[in-house]
Image 1 (spheres, one colour):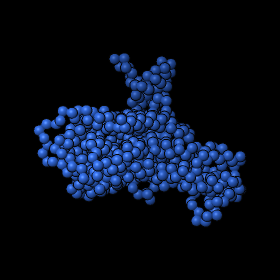
Image 2 (tube, rainbow, N blue to C red):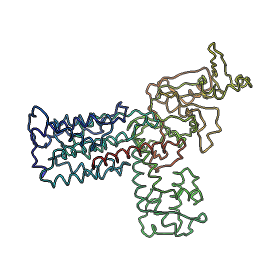
Image 3 (spheres, helix red, strand yellow):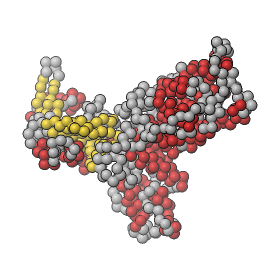
Amino acid sequence: MVNRIKISHKYKLLGIALLAFSLQHYNTSYAVEPQTPEPAQPLTPATPAVAVPVATTPPPAAPNYTADIIAQMIKGMIASSPWQKEAMTEIYRLSDHHLIWLNNKNTDVALKLLANMPASKGLHSEDYAVQWLNTRWQELKASADPSFEELALFDATLSNSLLSYYSDLRHGRVNPHKVSFDFQVNKEHLKLAQWTLNASKDGSLNTLAENLEPKLLFYRNLRRAFNQYQQAAQENKNLQFKFSQPLLENNSDPQVIPLRQLLTTLGDVIASKNSSNAKSSVYDLALIAGVKNFQYRHGLATTGLLSKETVAMLNVPLEYRISQIELGLERMRWVPDQTEGRLIVVNIPSFRLWAFDAINDPKSKPLTMRVVVGEAEDKQTPSLSSTMNQIEFRPTWTVPQSIIKNEFLDKLENNPSYFTKRHMKVTYRDNGQISIRQAAGDKNALGLVKFLFPNNHAVYFHDTTAQQYFSRSRRDFSHGCVRLANPDLLAEFVLKKQTGAWTPEKIDTAMHKGGSKRVLLDNPIPVMILYNSAMAIDNSGVAFFQDIYGHDETLKQALAAKQKAHANSAKKRLK
């Protein structure tokens, strides 16, 4: 049995050599290592580990034949990024190079965690070598004399799998910069190693996972929707509706029964306490209300009628919706895990902004408004997080060189009055460059106010003279900045805690009279520009949107590449 295995002097040194050598041969993946908050709850102080008995002093030299054994170890390891290398080095340094999981009463807990928990979080247990680990663990426990190579390979693989799961749960599987998302992800891998080792000793492996999982409201709502859709997919396989004509109240149709079951599982219909109602084929008021909620979540007119468009949305495979939600969960792990205070959020595919006074208070209703975002073809609005630190009333506009080159050169040659009518001053510089500056006022393209937050893309929120686009259902018409349907209301939100008594009347005066005026915010407000084709802002359920920029497919490919790398590692481990 494993708990009776004794490791000699030469095997302790071999173990150290195996781990050290293997940790030097990882490929690179992540390049971003900024800052991340510690888990929401402090972990219980670690208790002494129950380590495999080893000699305290290694022999003077390692055996010459260890090179071949080490090479086999490398083929079996699954780590693939610099942070994993450092985390694995740290966890075994902290364990004084003892194997962690042999003679450990929490090994089965760790294996159960990796087998059962990832699927409910939008992750995949096969990415963590679960099948191999369980098989090897049973074989090692049944073996009277396993080799040290087998013990070390199992131990290091389990450590690496746990570190990977915890990191994926907290920060996501894909580096956001590799899919053109400007979020800074800090894995804090050295702390993660310490937390994992502590949890291996005191049995808090599940608690650690709970503490590391994001607490952001949108993430939590989306994960709840993910579990609802998984349940619906299990209970409603191959479901297709074929309503030949819209049903009216109290009409009957056999398809009403599975429709009611589906919408109840998805949360659109409140489950009836009367079992006979659940099996009723009558299109009643409760089901009509559920259809209206379903229509709202899918961007349809909330008529309650089973229109052609509504039936088409009902027939979208649930597996596709689950995939959308999974991608949303991945992206929500990249953003700052804000659990309190004010927050301004834009979700690009939904063409909408929300401004929260208290992000953690479900009773606090956010300000919300329509927005126009960057054109899908070549002027996409970037996804990022920042902090709004100032607003500017009656701004001027210095036209970017890209707009001058692509849109204004022809007008300069053939229609110079275009610029005069719009209060634009054209300057021809000695170096041949042209600059155009538009004066503040009602004709300014930025409107009467803009909202600034530092970022690498020179984007901001602003008013606009092009009001006609806000009535469109699809609103990607800008050059990359976010245009606001109600900039005055956002100004009131931003300035209501600002010194100087910024009343609605004072804001209106600043927008319509005088020259340009900048206001530095006393209390800067976090800003997130998100890209989710599945979004759950509140308890009304998950809403789905068109993937206008094609980012979903890009992320799918990146995740598939990660899974392929895991599969290749598994094949090597079996050799």
